[in-house]
Amino acid sequence: MSPAYSITFAVLGIRPEPYAVTPTLSARIGIAALSEEPVHAIALRAQVRIDPNRRSYTDEEAAGLTDLFGPRERWSDTQRSFLWMHCATMVPGFASGGTEVDLPMLCTYDLEVAGSKYLHALRDGTVPLSFLFSGTVFIRGETGFAVQQVPWDRDDRFNMPVSVWQDLMAAHFPDTGWVRLSRETLDALSAFKSGRGLLGYDQAVRELLAAGGA
Image (tube, rainbow, N blue to C red; front, side):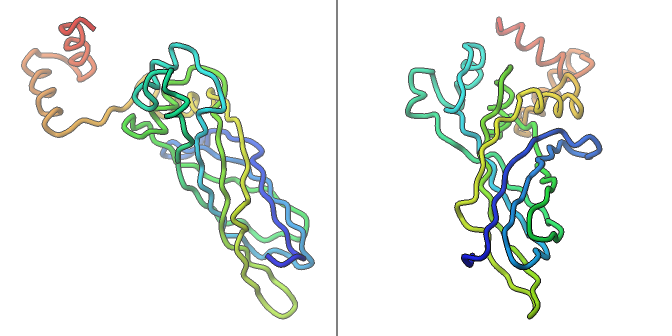
């Protein structure tokens, strides 16, 4: 960026998107720009990371995080920031000063994905997030358009309430969750269910857990 131009980003809030077909969060992003020329548009991108070492955990939560970080005594070595998602949006033009925009964050409840596994283990408190912004700024001036890149060091932290994630999943998957199985395992589970005349896979898994003493 030229010395006459400066742009910064701040995460103002995150909420479930109520009318999305698939689970989607909406992050409200505040944009401040100081320039002698208006911004025509911004092709905004963000890398969203989870910073697990920025919060504490109950014993129940720690048990759910064992697959990710191992036992609690190893967390000083294993608990590192990790990628949750990439997201992007187009920011409409605005005059020098600032604007706000909604950044869609498409989510999954697949428990094979590290981010979903981490969020599923949390019971209360907040999710420590880091947004690393990038993208392209289109500036409209008297002599035409200029294109500049968002500086690499534009980032912001935000502590999203765990309840936001819980509300999102409850809206799309009320009282349920998703586990990915191999075709071979699914076929075996289907045969077990049919052979015992069970009504659903949930009941089949419950019987298997009971037989195993779980």
